[in-house]
Image 1: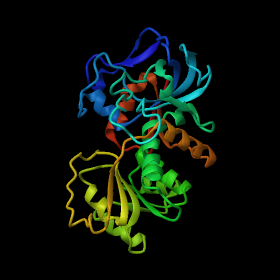
Image 2 (image 1 turned 90 degrees about the horizontal axis):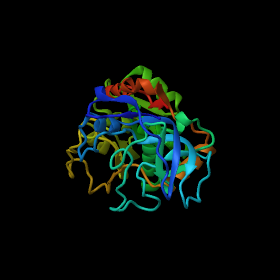
Image 3 (image 1 turned 30 degrees about the vertical axis):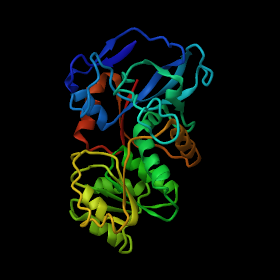
Image 4 (image 1 turned 120 degrees about the vertical axis):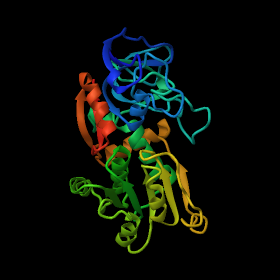
Length: 337
């Protein structure tokens, strides 16, 4: 079978090779991967710049995949051959709150899914939404589940509340779509007129160009009747956390869901009125398989379709990674397998 592998780290070292097709062990399923989507995390891992231990070489990258079940290992009773599935990123986070022992993550502690076939534990996949293509399903495991977990499970978003999103990356676009489906108002930030038009087309109630408004938290207040928002997802980290905090109202919820501009968070408890405003700052990274399944049902009911920037072939894997590294896409980057 075909698989993408690294024998040394670096995007330039990605190569498509032939390796043996795996066979499922007891409790595993063999998944025929149809599509894989990429995250900023994949660039860090592939480049060898990850902040934790790097996976051993040779390494098959990427965590977010979708496909069909090709074969069942012994004692697998929850799935059947032909089922359409998505890969769960934190494999043994089945339900409930995150626990320390839920440590096994695809393409971090394990090999990734950028191959024609992969074996996964039967609890490490979820049923794919019926209304989505395999390319669309592949975009869900990290970006969509992170947005859902932040808005629904942690922020307990209510109809009529206001959500602030940042940019046009995967998590932010899904947050926009899910927030609108939940009956919330959405204010989005971006850097260009073209992206502003796209965000408005997707349902944003207002868009702030942060190039024209470098103190964009002031625009958030102006657009929201002088009040802060109830919920925001901070994607960039170091360069945006201060304005994200200043955009919140009393009892507001801030999810730190990315670190594109850096991971250090310069926070002044008094300046940002964190204590007196009872603001909650929550670390976020994906969610449980149970949460993933609930989100998929919401996607079906609300006819939500992920936004895909570009679909690449397996042979164009380097170009796909370079597109993520450049970082100017609207929505997700997908590789068709």
